[in-house]
Image (cartoon, rainbow, N blue to C red; front, side, top):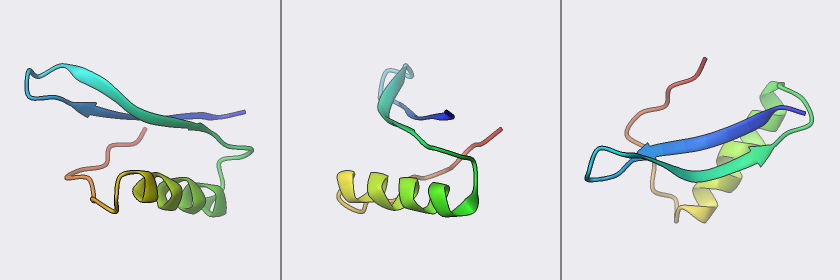
Length: 53
């Protein structure tokens, strides 16, 4: 089961965990659901950047 962490950087330059999710598969539909759900939790504040591997 893929683990999807949302990591940010605080004002001290340290990495912080903003949230995470477990998804059943790495398909587009699951990632759309994960990002939409995460945005709701973040009061629809968009991130400045998204980095993926």
